[in-house]
Image (cartoon, rainbow, N blue to C red; front, side, top):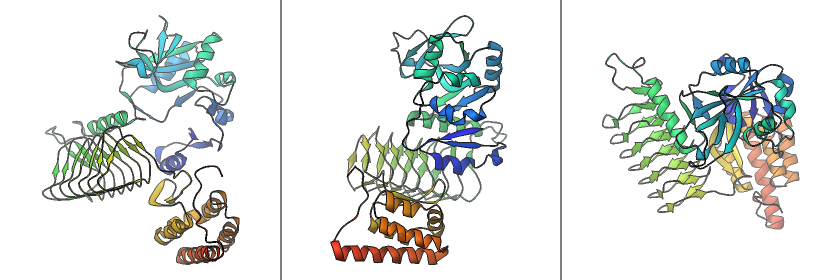
Length: 435
């Protein structure tokens, strides 16, 4: 298996590793920083490994489509490429494929209106291709749907369509993601997994979840290990609560996914939403149909209206009404991890914040970033403080570990900051725009 890593590369590597636990052997290919590479253009990164028929799988889908059957169909068709298709009620949000009587694709329509659509067959994001297809990628920025497949048709190359009515959902949006959660919960609470009564069951990965005696769990739902749910909390159907999350008394969750280490206060009501890792939701908060990013802090009595997207690590003050996309200029912040993909909830956008993060971070986080040279790269590349970066580099080369490493990093940075402040009275913050 070849995995092309993009913006979520750390999380992907942390989960998949080398593939051993999944019975796979995984090779990672990296999209170069600053270079725009399209979905088709990225095939060039792994071209040296693609010497036989291969399957492309976009990473934002959940499905039961029989892919082995699709591969066999492709081989029998003699096509250069085969697109796996499914039927939808409304094709206006998709690229539509028109097939002839032999299941060859003759034409594409890009997001036609319902009235204009000549088919309701849309791409699932799965493609079976021959190695020679890579030769027709004219530009690294090319995408499959917009560029490569129309180009192949223009050149009169055969592109086939394999149609399946098996379950498929695009989980790259909120509605699709929650549909995917429902499908998974239904799947693992189906009769073959349930008691002999066939009734829905409470799903927990083990017995370490602490659930108050007066808490109400409406099945089916999914609760992972070491979750704490207080009395008078209500967990509705098709909720997913990941490990180490805490749900306080009086809070009601409905059709909501709560990620790892989330803390939700008292008397909140959260419906049809996703709450990201390490987010803190204070008391009396209402959230409906929204995504709360990892590390966010939502103040008391905040009302988050449907359709809102709050980026990671944003703080919303008490009593606010929030609607739309809420972002913070934190693209250049330093995010503290304990290892690939495991965010601590701490970040720094200034020297003062950097010192505070060093004081609060788990020691494994400090050792992780020091070993990867992350501290010196951030200080040099974002804050443009070469002298401080050089000192951090010298300290790293000494090979310190544990609390000694934390102590010396903090002291070194404080002394540098004190010297700069007394000399120039400057406040150094992360840049989020060009100077």
